[in-house]
Amino acid sequence: MSGQLYTTEILRLAASIPHHARLVHAHATAEKRSPVCGSRVTVDVALDAGGRVGEVGLLVRACALGQASSSLLAQNILGRTPDELATARDGLTAWLAGKGEPPDWPGLAVLAAARDYPARHPSIRLAFEAAAAAAADAARAKAA
Image (cartoon, rainbow, N blue to C red; front, side, top):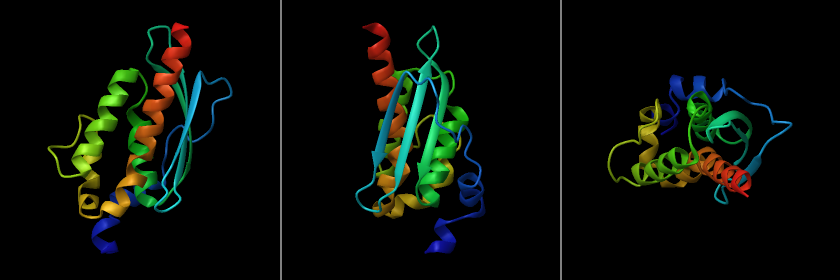
């Protein structure tokens, strides 16, 4: 199982998470935790004047799959809208459950083998769930 699931690419992503430091002046923060394995991801976001993610900071305490997913999120989150993050989160959830293709987010196909391991899905989803929640909270705060 582990040889097939934990590929060199997964381990490389897990070891190289961009934006792996909390933001001092975040507009919003969200933390998600997997009750299955205890993995936890905290995402801070600051939106730019156009309502897109301008800055992000992550604190990742997760298994290699959760770290790899966090890395993929962090590599491509800047410039995304809260709606785009919600769409990616929902698409990732559906894809992991065997419904359709991977969402339109670069690199997620590397996690394809994990689809056969439902107990791993919550950890993989954490970064996307936290980012979508933080961005939505930041947008609401900006609108108020």
